[in-house]
Length: 113
Length: 115
Image (cartoon, rainbow over all chains, first blue to last red; front, side, top):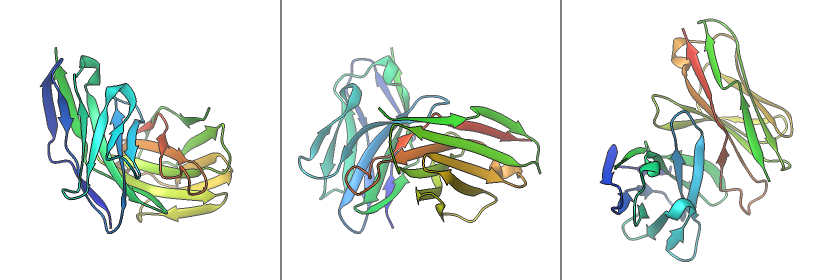
């Protein structure tokens, strides 16, 4: 079975500083990896995904993530955080041919003005 | 473009009452459809998924059921609500077939409070 770990409950960062949200995964096979963002009382918005190819994936709103197979990680990054990036961020994993997504518990990101 | 709708947005129901939440998708055909529950503002639990009309897979045993009466309509139901059914219910869709089907797109959600 696939699983995802997001080790930090909350990430605090000053506006303008780099933002990193950590994610590690466990699967028996080649993973599909995703990041979603959720604003209060809203559904999840898709940010980016890794399927195959280049390990550095670029997504919406200036976010990017790097797939690291040896460390089984898929950390989300943004070079310069905005106050509007404050939200709940979810990492998720699935396998080819299996559309079941396993989500991490989520990270609350707080960007301080 | 594709859009996904859920209603109602918010629902307050007494324990023991029935439930019906609706999800519809526009702008695509034969989507894969999913129901998730999010408790306490955090982790998501997959409840049901469907690859076609009348085809429902249940992920966890519970007080809820799902139906897909039409291609782009997915309904979550209960005959008698429990307090533990409170939560934020999210519907999602992904494209049919293998190419692109790995990415799920979520609706706005329904907040259910059982009293």
